[in-house]
Length: 223
Ligand code: BG6
Ligand code: MG
Image 1 (cartoon, protein in one colour):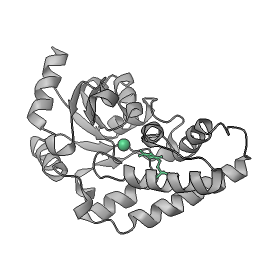
Image 2 (image 1 turned 90 degrees about the vertical axis):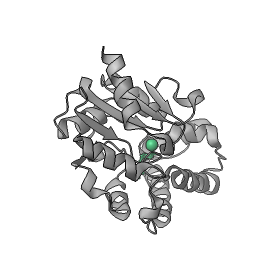
Image 3 (image 1 turned 30 degrees about the vertical axis):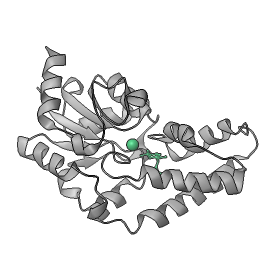
């Protein structure tokens, strides 16, 4: 039986994935002379700030072009831009269907925690006024490895005392689905089959998320 849910934030609960993209696109263009595209953006989803910068530098063939100090400056510039984009967020920015879905999970009695790689996650949850739903938020500063490593999902499940095999994880990123499955959890994907084909169950968008379907697919897989 399901004992708990671990949630990604960016791209699942709210559409901040487009703000991350917008901020990186500008910094990559202005500072690095690299023009990123949606395919590169898929690889940035779920990935930490510094790892995202490294993905962009690799894509542009500039892996060794900058010092660590310069790289930290680019990452800070991106985050400043990102913060200016998210500071106006309100509960109206919660993705369609998410509020109902969180209510259904709460009503069914499953605890929830947040497994977001973002250091801005607590701020966003506060802006969206969703704090009451999450028993815990993993602090990404405590992680030794980022997604696709399972560590963040394991910590999130530990915080709500949910055994990994009884935990359901939700993700919009390839790296996230991999991490959830490597933790031995059941992976719910939100997005396109071309990208998230490995998920245990896939919904095209958040409006289609359905707790009963997840429970049925989970029971089927654990049979
Ligand atoms: C993840 C996003 O949730 O957080 C990534 O999907 C982002 O794109 C990562 O790089 C780190 O976020 P932040 O806010 O700490 O820079
Ligand atoms: Mg995400």
